[in-house]
Length: 502
Ligand SMILES: NC(=O)C1=CN([C@@H]2O[C@H](COP(=O)(O)OP(=O)(O)OC[C@H]3O[C@@H](n4cnc5c(N)ncnc54)[C@H](OP(=O)(O)O)[C@@H]3O)[C@@H](O)[C@H]2O)C=CC1
Ligand SMILES: O=C1O[C@H](COP(=O)(O)O)[C@@H](O)[C@H](O)[C@H]1O
Image (tube, protein in one colour):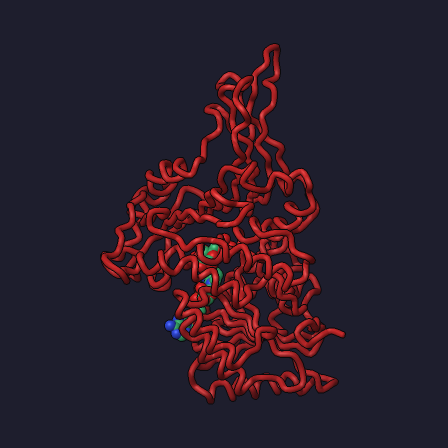
């Protein structure tokens, strides 16, 4: 028999979005809810209630909530669906720390539920809010808005804390009101198609799984690049920095799936048990294995410190590279480089697994094999291989087997990460959410380096400058070389190599 947490919510459900006026809500949460609604994945007769402090009428709320929904060709069918979506949505304005506002919300929820044909009431509370108000909201929702005859779920966003201690405090405070089964900690990278693909790619392909260890793999890079700066989010960002924003959560999650042992099943606890196990084998990061950067004005674009919302002289890193070491028999000695930066030359997130050299002898100057998982944009898996150069002589040429999703699966829509995760939460499936012990061990790995950056044990380290729109600090080349990364033969270019250049 299904336990309450495994129940799929099919009807009598309200989704309440706190922080409905914010950046995340308008860019990701509402478009994802719309995508699920349009495709018939939300519970029957679902209702959506936006909640935030901002006073606005429903017209303004609808404008904000639907402004990022894509309808490039003005398709009337989608326009009609957007109109229907507005009809199932409503807005309540109220504070996050004042009790009467939650009573007002409760009356609105009861009003909606009074039309139900049964006593069942399911409520999903989505906290698209800054962490400073997670607890006051979680506590008041439990007190005033918890449905007694149905299922309650709470979805919380990252960052969950600023270090090990604050994360434990937050976890403890939330646990007083919400059980682990009711809690869904989102890391939206776990909802991305290519991240979900890693389990299949690794464990359903014997050719790959047998080469998946220190004997075959030299080094691994997990890279996040964004072509824009903190524009408008400088205040938030400066408090957290790139490590808390991207590495400690998104990239570490990818790393854990990439390196864990095979789980007994795809069940949430089996997968998360294995992730925790490998995370526990990772050494805390040290300054020697870390490179920090901060973007400066270039190409007509402002530097980080030119942002009015950033404190003058801030040393907050907008770029970071760190090498992680896993102390277990599979990965002993293999460097895992996590790199992330804002205001770089392109938008790209990828995993690059570089294999070891083949024995020399018949080969002198030969490129290494690389398996690349391009998480975004344009999802792809490609394997860099050496082939014989076409022609009348024998020479190895670097090339690749390329599985670009757009070409391979032309009729298959790849869901947005938030669509996949909200649907999982409605189904009660925790597999792609972060468990409390996963979070704890993730903070253990990163807390020492974060305290060093925050100047807790001495002067704050000064980040290396890099121009807006560049590839990051120039020192990164030497940093990855130190980890045994070697570039492909000069002259190789993707997708077409001109043999005359080799
Ligand atoms: N934006 C993004 O792309 C992503 C964001 N996240 C996470 O989602 C959460 C929300 O992010 P985002 O929407 O960008 O944040 P916002 O700064 O836009 O905050 C969301 C809403 O919360 C309210 N708010 C803002 N600051 C405060 C404050 N100091 N005290 C109380 N309420 C406040 C505001 O609503 P009002 O004043 O109307 O009440 C605001 O509209 C964060 O935890 C963030 O880390 C995660 C992934 C991506
Ligand atoms: O969590 C965050 O992620 C976004 C990047 O998300 P993506 O899905 O577009 O890759 C990042 O811009 C933001 O700073 C961070 O908080």
